[in-house]
Image (cartoon, rainbow, N blue to C red; front, side, top):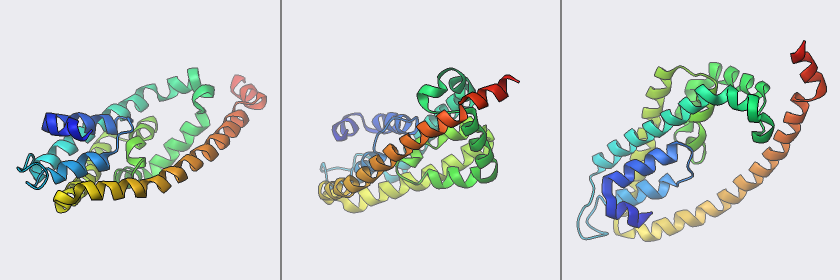
Length: 210
């Protein structure tokens, strides 16, 4: 990823930002932290990027990727549940809950979610499924993405020539986080299977049939 950013510059940052916000698991911490380091002359002997340029490209790319994920959720959410609900572990009850949640806490969820690792990658999809209004979604996505990208870029800029060591420390810190996330995912998977079976049981189907 680092070589991709060095060779293709702003285009690489733009494409990576789109992909990461469109549900592709790309670590933006590394992408924009490294780009921030390249805003100094300490890594390659010259400044390849400007801080403002990295932030602008990152925000625009993040917005485009987020809108893609949002529109997929908005246009295909219930269709996917109708056809593949039992395979993707979603029911119409889940969509109803998501809509209720976003009707009450949607703005805060999107804004805060955009600055949280892992969550920021997937927050746009449920916002679309819940049919959150496009205007607030776009505005809050821009604000949250700007804060996140600027923070990572400035941290990378401050690290400068020490980016390699800082990046190594970030990876070490991520390992226990990844382990916790995996455990939570397994636990959540088991709960989802039980919930889908409960809401797709004979009594539920009979009620919808009537």
